[in-house]
Length: 76
Image (tube, rainbow, N blue to C red; front, side, top):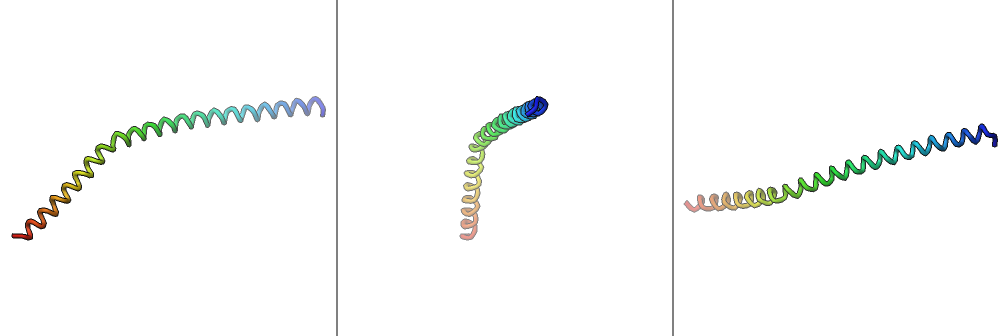
């Protein structure tokens, strides 16, 4: 190999390394951003679980009351 070929190979390898480092950094940033978003969503789900339970219980109570009213009105 000539010096020119070696220098070109060195330049190509440096360019490839720079590309890989840039892609790695981009990937790392995207991963951190998505992890943060995931944590926010999990916290939101946790905050909403008691509300969902309360509403589910309220719906069950209303259904029960509705059915009781229906059977009560049929008696008269």
